[in-house]
Length: 264
Image (cartoon, rainbow, N blue to C red):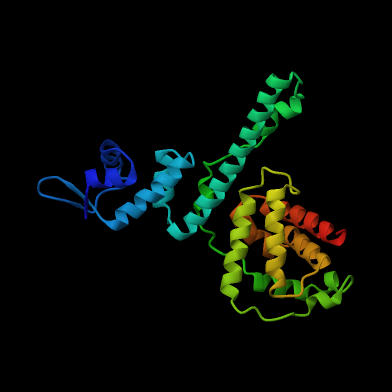
């Protein structure tokens, strides 16, 4: 167990902050002694780490309370932390590049266009989406996706029937499903970018490779799967749990990747 002063030193927060978290029921110590001293457990410190991640991402204490009390899954949340921090990192890098261009404008005397001047400010970081931390009730299964698309013979056989033939049985479907859901969540956090943005297409390349581990994926099959995601409620209903409109956005992003593969 740790005293409040020890926790403050370990976590780099003030004792007053810890007292405040206790008073608003955000993080209460596991024990309070007869001397009214607060004693914190390792589990309390793990919770504090999650709170500090959420604060760093711009969530208010009120919203952090809502997230923590709403069926919080720390393992799932950590993946969301990484996605939002990567998004924040990208925005900061764009702002730094914009500042350097503006600095060069002063040094060189060559004026920037208005598009260049404000390019970095069009990328908005929206950290207050509580829904990102709500684990989907139904996670999308890659195996189910591909078994369903296999049944869509009217879609597939018209273009390339061989795509429905399994290449190999994946050795770890749970691992593949977990990675697929990571990709869906990551792409959901990038939907403010155009579908052909490098960050989005990086995830599409990962997704194409993931599907290829289970079936012999081709650009046409990838495109057909994208269409089903947007047009078939069996897919859109579960995919959109990661973000409103994700199935439509995913279709566009997958089409971009499929087209790039065909013209490579």
